[in-house]
Image (cartoon, rainbow over all chains, first blue to last red; front, side, top):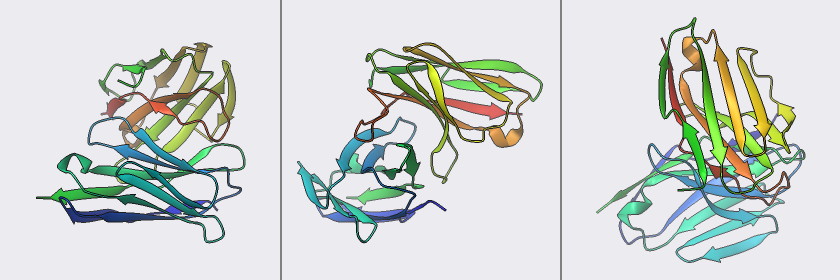
Length: 109
Length: 114
């Protein structure tokens, strides 16, 4: 079967760094996405990785290891507005997105 | 604003009602999607349309019926729903179906079935 695993909830302190992990087992792989979803709002795109390595975009970075079926999203210099759910999704062999249940990130002052 | 709008934002319906959800995208995209989002569960892909043709139907009950009259509009017709169908229904669009295309989501319709 197809499976995406990520922690249910994480807590971090304003100004700190947090890493949200995602492991996957899918039928085929055509890239991995990270989305951010604030409570009551639509998911918004953060990053896309299809090759191994680290992609940096401002305070957010995303890492992929295809051989390990593993990705992480790294958030630096955390701000209160970063409190949200972070969704990991894999594009499978049919280009359909398989989603994780999301990680709720709570930022404390 | 993502360029994808959904109406209504909230809907309460009885099990015998018929209602429709509407999605409109102003981005010139060719692919559109319906997702179901239940609390603490992964997004479930329901339907995929590419250039107004349905390309995927992920074993969705027939009480959900999609319609895509053109590449800018997508409907989800609801009929004799069950309480377990209560959820957030999200519409999304992308330029094409290829893997690297990010999806742009609408704000969703919060559906409650009594």
